[in-house]
Length: 539
Image (cartoon, rainbow, N blue to C red; front, side, top):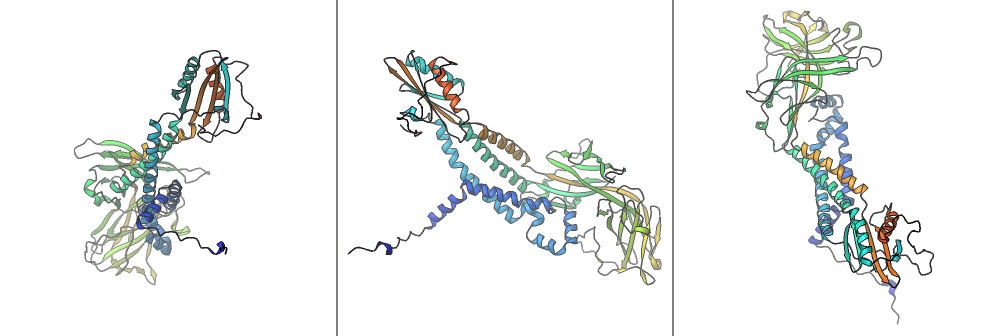
């Protein structure tokens, strides 16, 4: 009785063991397709780092973003959007790409090393079956013909092997070398970035013009560094900001646009070194060894004097106000916690050019033309010193009472040189003048040089892989009674076949000994009944 084959079930595949499963996933990870996908994913993951403000670059903007978008800012903070390049998800993509590239490149390097040491492949048995070929005759001897062909090939940097009355020639090995250099350069870029992330640091500091900065941890407004970096590794340099010049467009076109933005600084590279004077501009940092100091921003610092109810000076000096718009409408707080019998504090808005009475506290131009300072004040019992650091740009009003003027809240507006008395004889506040401040970014990225070299090598390798064409040429001589029959054929190992016909023709004419002959070499026609498509490796 016949068996019903339609009911046969396929044999179940054996289950993969731990070793086979690991090998399968390793092969998937180290495939070129996965490496390209991870590279694309890394580029996409880096986009938020250029859109969302980053703590390591500008913590002031991060704080402003959170204040303006409380819910979104809290969500961004949880998923590491303010620290994209050190977040766990970005690091995971980075490490997977690193492993994928290494696993993909090592086998290719081994294969390429074997190919470089190997001789060109043997001449196929039937060159006339190759798609690109030519046939000619010569009355000279076979050795003379081969020598002419060999000289032509050597002149064009082919690797040549003569064996059994035939020549095998090959060139274009640098194409694969370019591919390997390109991929190895990507690994070098990752190593350079990793070195900078582990051993580098970046911090910001706001320095009032006329004051200085010492490169110690306590001088930074914010400081972030890699896990292998310690504050004891900070180079001991000092910098003082001697002057700052910012000029803005006054004409009707692009009014208020910055035209000049530079600071003159004095740098002492190390204790005991001679001071040197430098100009600090945007995109032109001052270098101190491997550390770079960039100029990121600037603003205004109103100079105020606060006196308490006893007439004592509780605070005197410039106070940094942070700009809120392009015209430098700025906000800040003044803390006079040493005032007695009650401590004093103020929230204020500063406008370099404005009319607070008519338009409110909004600046009309970024330059210092008509400065005004609007304030409201608080008072309360002295606080006990806890040693806990406090944000100098915000005021915690817990336990404080806002000054009132009758039934209204007390507010005042001051111009330089004016003084306002506080209600109930609590003291006074004077607006003495305006200083400028600059925001400095101090950073060191140890792997930056490695990354720069790697990018240059990647470009060179990419050029090699794009413009070098690997090509094979063969020449065979067959002696008969009428002289020597010359067979020449060629094969491109890349998709682009530009110039192969010309090379085969030129090599044929060189072997024949009559370059530029109008007759040209004899060529079998594809319409010949005995002609058939060749097989490239037909031996």
